[in-house]
Amino acid sequence: MARKKNWRLLPGQEPTELDRQVMYWENKGKLVPKRELIKTPEQIEGIRRSGVVNTGVLDAVAAQICAGMSTLEIDKICRDYCVAHNATPACLGYEGFPMSVCTSINEVVCHGIPKAEDVLQEGDIINVDFTTILDGYYADASRMFIIGKTTPEKEQLVRVARECLEIGAEAAKPWGFVGDIGHAIEKHCKRYHYGVVRDLCGHGVGLDFHEDPEVCHYGRRGTGMLLVPGMVFTIEPMINMGTWEVFIDADDPYGWEVISADELPSAQWEHTFLMTEHGVEILSY
Image 1 (cartoon, rainbow, N blue to C red):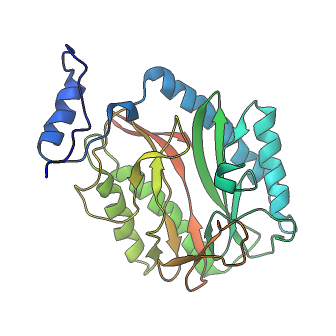
Image 2: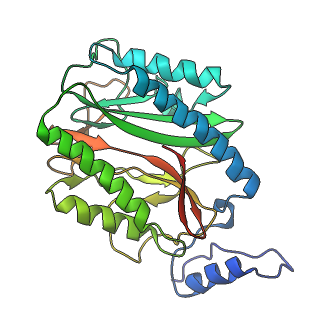
Image 3: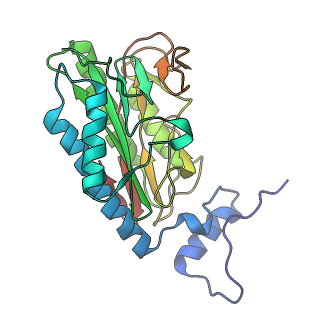
């Protein structure tokens, strides 16, 4: 059965060079984005402004995070900065998520819920993941923090996870494919015998929290959705020290916290990217 066409011209519309390129790939059987995934210049500027606030939130955390701080205090730092800049935390209330930010310590892969009893200890590694809504535009990013001095194994994991993000971004080219990103990340990760989480992925973002395409962090070159200038998406590889498999914490009453299946440490970095004619531009980090 033929795939339903995603890319459509308006009645009487003359195709632009961008239209012709997209339709070329669609006619070759490739998955292409719907037109609404290509952001207008005005939308891009709105997402960029949201990204500035989002980056500022994580900078505020970086300036204060330390041993002895609870993740509930991190939540307050994020929420206060966001509100002070006339923005809204996207996580708060999203599908029942109770807090403003995700704080994922050690073996928690992602979606960790801030709590007063989760106090950072020397040697912990923690991912702080925040999404901002400003004037209706979304920006999303996360960073890893090492609390004090940790083990060489955890240091390497955090470094390699960052390298995976950078390598994935380098592989994201205009008129390439989402699978190119995942292939590059997985190849680098395998050198260290780490597991690339498969159950969660990056995503389109900008006008909503989660949009197409899904950006898997493993895969084959030339597969997945066509990357077209004007698309905005995250790359956010979750790299486990052991297996790629994960589970949901049965003790989490909200059903959000994701933990590595072997309970070995996990690390993640995330940026929001704009695809341009020349490669990706970082909108939030």
